Length: 312
View 1 (cartoon, rainbow, N blue to C red):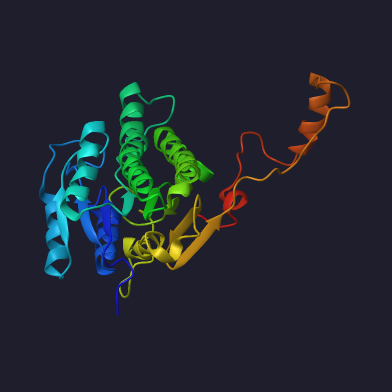
View 2: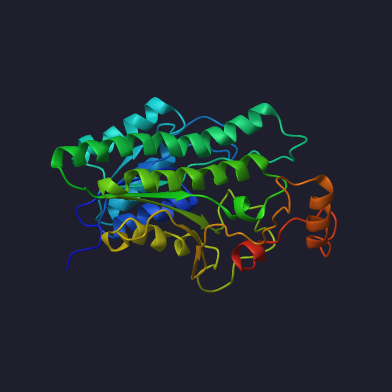
């Protein structure tokens, strides 16, 4: 019996540890040949010297289990190196079928304390890194589709976060980057649909070195699989990369611990119409101030208002 991803080639960025590692292993288990990308810096803030170790170790783990994998240790936030990553997959395996963007770093600080470099570095790795690989993968699929005169197979799975949905006070750079990734995803989904390519984004909750502070109060269970283990997220990525998900496009899904939630696009919660050609200050005050009267000053929307879910 053929495996769901048999004969397909996938790239997973940031795959040396945590979520990316679990996703690479799952794609390989489902039959894909995997290019494991990781820049290999030891610090979760992107500090330290780059290393081939993490990517090589995961690729070796896949091969030891009988799968096909090779390592790439370039920086996906560098336009040229992202192009080399996509070209490596094509040259080694003949084509690229799935791209999973997961690489990222953290440089947390309140907005009034954040430096320009802390902002730029996080936007660069998360948002620009997603764009760079998407650009080269999209060009590959477009060229193949034009040559074939028909749609081809292509899947993009991007990694966003609930930090953009429900806010994260000490992560203005991270939240902005993750919101940008959703915009990139929906734009890409619309642009590439005619070529046979889908693009979706996930908001995963998982215990990794990126989230060790967030989940510090949630201890791992003594027995059984940790509800926050990355292995809970990986099957959804495998599904979205598969032929079965051909009708899933431009979607945002929250996933963790045996739960997947499909997030709706924003809906209008209330509408107010002026009785004149344009609003006056007094009219807006009379309409909007009562609408927010039951909300304490300074309170923003709650996560449950966005998702109907309780944040971990």
